[in-house]
Image (cartoon, rainbow over all chains, first blue to last red; front, side):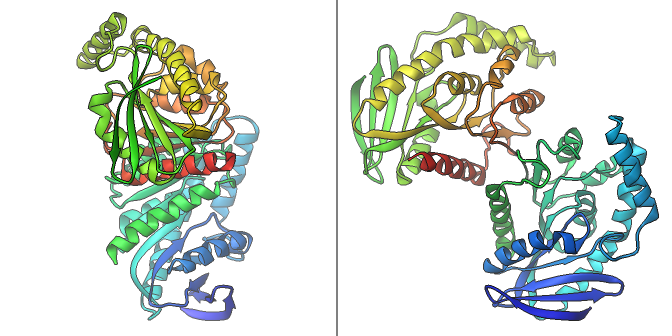
Length: 244
Length: 244
């Protein structure tokens, strides 16, 4: 992990960009360290997502958490993934034509991301947990929900997750969802047209976690109400503090 | 409205039993009055439900709210409703036999309650709002969800509602649900076997409210987690305080 830039934000938050191999990322740490860590998931394009990510980071820092994110495979300035781009074009064509989104499209759109992103998140976690500034339990918040699902299964260091259900999940991963046992807080935008609501409900049902809750709100894909975000924060605080 | 008993509870909460015509009820008021009011819905049997109702009342009083509940038609010591009792027996038979719960059973089970309970709630509201201890906006919290749905449509004095989706709703009421416009916070116990989950999801979808959110949790019919109750309280506080 190599830090490439550093700046102080309001509230005495230290923002550092880093690269880990080919993967760029950002780490935010609060004034008081070592701090427990929340990994911030997103749909790809850290620069585009930056305003929302940094707002979340500053809020978390005020509550004593470090946060970190990495660029998705194919996202931002990283090399495009041809198979995913092609699947995304097929998805848009299907939606525009009012045709069903086939399992084949979803598999090609999501599985390559999951395969590549999960080891990258795990390597990032290795590197972050080796820093003296990071200590204590680890949470996950955001999307891509299929990536977060796989991560929750294979990565025992993640104690609880807020999942943003704003993207497709391959049917082949539903069996995997049954193996998730950590507490989950799932956010669903009920009227998100770019989503498959029934798929999210089926996925929520499939999760093996004894403690799981689904929070559906209005406002479209990007319109998660502030109070819903706050509920998610309280969920993480409840679970990460228990583990401290 | 005739008060029939009075006692002080912890936290300087005044509990008064009353009757309004044939309908018995309980009013809880906080130390500081006039107070805004939350109507507490329940599945019938105030005495059986008392521990949960009084806990809710004391919590609400600590936040400055008065609360009130009335016995359901056919509930507690009120005269039984033969048609509802018969439908309940049919429902139990159907569930025990693994047969579908028909629309006919649900209509006979729920519609008579809705028809009778809604005017009773409205008359109670008239009487409560005439008391000097009650002032400001009115919320509703609890079930029966079909009663609460009708009440939300016909009673303009109710500003926001926490609905507990723990009972059946006649299909014929879904069109009515589209006419609900107040903010709604719907609690669904995901693994509640005595409930029809898909029906709740369809009903939630039907509600016409621009602000509505669905909160699904594990733990069975009576196992609403504490944090879910707290989220509901925050929802009411947000909406009732706005209206003050």
